[in-house]
Length: 61
Image 1 (spheres, rainbow, N blue to C red):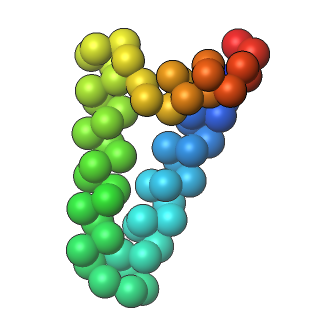
Image 2 (image 1 turned 180 degrees about the vertical axis):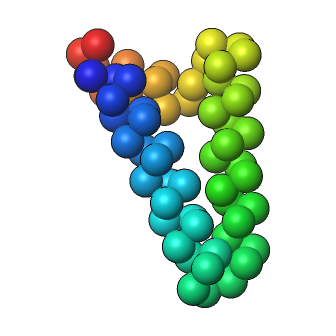
Image 3 (image 1 turned 90 degrees about the horizontal axis):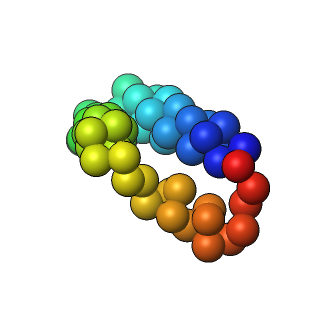
């Protein structure tokens, strides 16, 4: 369950920031890059802040 939530958050953030970057201001693309960098970091370090938060909220795996 946690993995699905994390993927949904990441995907939503990317799509929202791309939309905001296209329609509002191109600086929103930096947020897209930030989300991508965090995904890369979590794949290398095997640590994700959202996973820690979900664990503390007692979300089941």
